[in-house]
Length: 424
Image 1 (cartoon, rainbow, N blue to C red):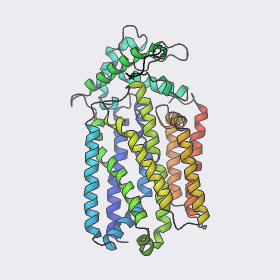
Image 2: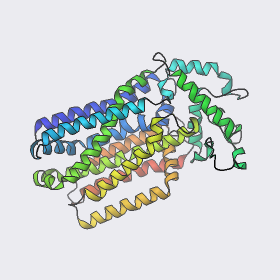
Image 3: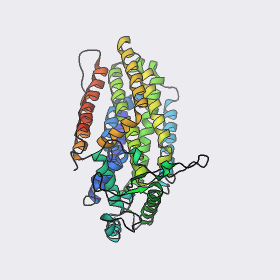
């Protein structure tokens, strides 16, 4: 394999990795006295996934990416021109998708400067103890509400107010059901907090969204994290698109891969498998964010990301199944069959227990996560990295690596049993 290929991929992936870690590092530094952990866990699909599982995927796909580039550079007809054209197309798509997300009319709390959020809290200080006459809570306190409730229970989707009434369906008595409203009411514990009607809570949500948009409206009010995010988001989108393209093309050119890079097959399979498992955390964490955001911001009609997130999750789910069914052709037939059956069973369970899965992820890796959860997620990622270089003498190296990752995830899921514990 060409040395230049290794250097190019190493430099490119290092820049992408630095963009992952840098955005979260800036958030922690800027909001260190303003609830950075609440912000990072609420928006875990941005600030936890990329510096943890994103880095794992980068390392896992390093060798497959090198082989992909080397193969196109030396063994594919017009491969150099194809690669350069494809690189430009993916880069252009990444920039375009990032611009669409950045053009969203709905702003996030972390996009507001901490000083502006402090002023918001000062102006609505009475609302943190009493909601009489208060249209909404301060933005940071409303966010903290999500965190407190997520740590005290599993399952918060039923607390979302029904703001969009179907005009073809007559209103029923359920519209008068009172719920805890995260946007307007301080959480005082079970049975102590005032409950609101859906109409009252939807009004508070709209007021909160409007206030956050206004606070982040001008460049002087924008946080440093928001500015860094604007420049690093294309790297994140490019990373996700690149993994889709590389894994797909390696599977498509499997015969050329085996003919020219037989010594790398085991490493490629292990890397693609571990990388795919790591990337699959993204759609789940994204949906955990969507469920939490519905409690605070409402339906998300003004958010370009929230309206397209289900499509992204569907795309990554299809990608994972394609990798599972079409990439591993060289392995022992029994192992291959077991892996495929396991993948189908896991998919069925995920579909049937989708809401429960998201509820647990909100607690473990979403708005309810504490510092202990973050450390455990980091330990899981470390085990995944070790699995990449674990080389048993058995031919079952790839399944063994996958089992190492999946068994490590058991450690994280067991932490759910301690709900209400770590409120770091």
